[in-house]
Image (cartoon, rainbow, N blue to C red; front, side, top):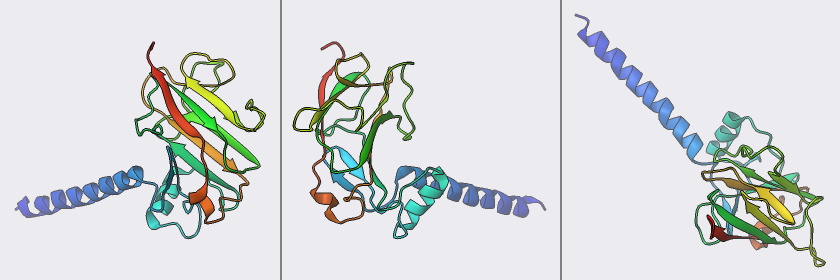
Length: 195
């Protein structure tokens, strides 16, 4: 007597529950289409515009993070080095070169969700274009490791994988199609462990 209604109830729970879980997975798996990859750095120029695809709009609405207009800024993330190896807190890295033209840029270490990484108190987890030490030709070199380094240094969490987030503010490249021709700083692994 209750077998058929129970079967319908279980079917609806599985269908709606499965649909919700797959939708949440799809939103977490990608930020949308239209990614531009320059070496280790990846950006989604259309992510915060009206022309963004439905997945990007859903991702943006679910994350609740502040996003920039196309002329305000452009965010690049790196989860691998220039050789394609995953960034690991047990290794040391160097960012060298120059950033594309921008009025201001910021760089910080982040966890895999894009949130600022938890580093030891007092250790620098972010740098910007006003505080970075530069060479006479305006290039820079930033050491990224768990142990303190002389010069420009970003601290890493004690273990696990991480991302680097580079945001260019008020950059002419954000609103143009010339993003593909940009020269991004190199991200190279300089060693792992005590080696």
